[in-house]
Image (cartoon, rainbow, N blue to C red; front, side, top):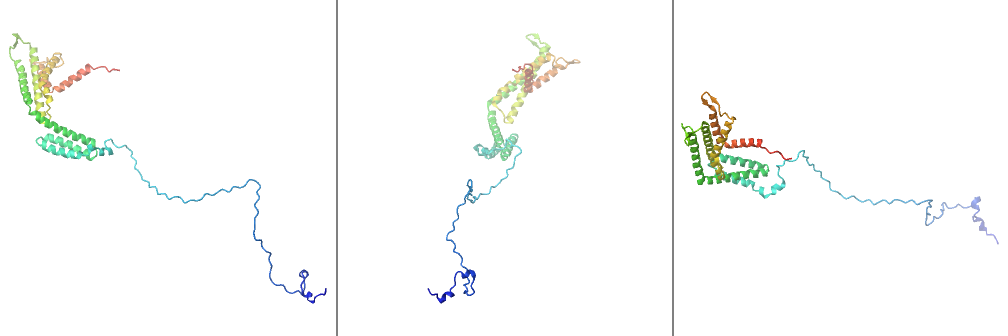
Length: 315
């Protein structure tokens, strides 16, 4: 095969290794090797147990809460007094009309008791306490004073009606008869040469008669002062008629008891100063005073009897 003259001009691959001065200049660029299309990372091999990655919970926004208002409550060092009313008292219909009842009683007192200044003042004083208790919300005491005023007005009306009854006139007639009877007993005992069934009366019997008479007179005075006072204060009660009727007889019995005590030597029954016997005079005075305030004497003797004859406490 004939050599082509143009073959010398061709560059051979070996010329790139050993150089060739006559080799033509190569183009100025770099040829990079092609990159793989897909890069696959092989799985990681672990020696041992697998590592569990904890799951992170999803974060949620907290709900909006309303601010809490703090209120300060004052502490009480002492319990409330019992007189302060509660809410249930104010709701009680009995206490809703207390103010109107007070106003009504004021008008009633001015109309019914205008001729009794003493009783009017007493009722106004009760209503004043009722008003003060009502304004302080002490409804229990306000109701008490209102009822006390109303009761006093009712007793006043009842007393006025009872005084007009003929029984009062009969009581006055009996008291007059009793005082005349007591005075007669005392007067008869001073008659000189007094005899009983034709026999002369002993001096001790005369002292007894005078003591009985003065005790009866004192009882009459007690009844005659108590009866007008109850009428004046409009506190007269017809149930007290028996007490007024028995006053002279109770004074008579007290005089007899005092005579017995004087004979026992407890009272100065036999005291003699000169020619005058002072003992009987003191006895008469005691009898009259005891008949006048016989309720005190009865209470005194009742206390003595209870002290002497007291019962033993049962165990």
